[in-house]
Amino acid sequence: MLDKVFAAGVERIVEIACQPSDWAQGEAFCAAYPGKVVCAFGAHPEYTRTLPADLMGRLETYMAKPCAAALGEVGIDYWWDIGTKEEQLALLGSQLPLCSKFDKPAVFHARNGKTSGENAYADLLEALKGWDYRPARRFRGVLHCFSGSWEDARAGLDLGLCLGVNGTFTYKKNDGLRETVRRAGLDNIVLETDCPYLPPQGARGQRNDPSFIPEIAAMVAGHLGSSNREMADKTTANAIELFGDLVK
Image (cartoon, rainbow, N blue to C red; front, side):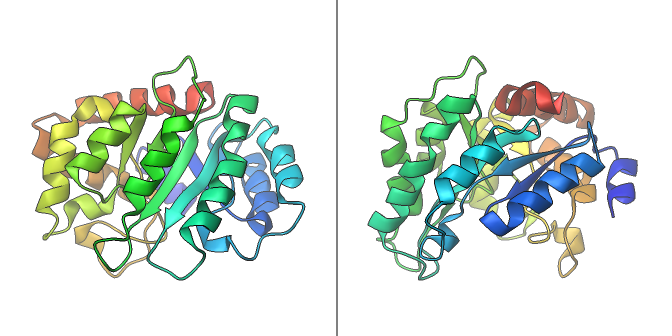
């Protein structure tokens, strides 16, 4: 799979290791592909009620490793019954200081609930108003797999976040997301996959992987009136503004 990814023109991968049992695997993955793969380490809200008591000490150890590019995924999820708002915000708040300690951005997860009142984006972005991480780079974090409204996007941009755009951009019924990305503009997005989930329209039903990034890029470029080359160059530059020299 990775041979196919690199042959497609993808040069760097940010692997997400978002629960303690993933962290050693993430580090080993980076070691197997030096200069190609880096890692985000964190505790996803899905594990709010099952995390070990020594979570933070172990997470600090991994955030200090040379392969650590970010904290993540961290955030809020109301789709599944995984923890109350208060429990999830407490988990998020316990991890955010690691960004300042290690000068690493955060990969944020937000998924709204099944009713209009369960707005994960609103609660996440409200919580981040007190976040004190201020890197020299342009972006403090990314709203991963962005699926919110333009109002959510605008609030995230105002907080120094960029938007993660993936295969969902290509889905036939996602006109609202395409318009939000157009309004955000090429300066404020990075490309991603969320693999093995959410492949682009042309590969629905298949296992997703980063070799689909060029297909996603072409779709976004066409919608934004950009060339494929400009799309590749700009989103790569944005990724460096997010993750720093580890992805150069």
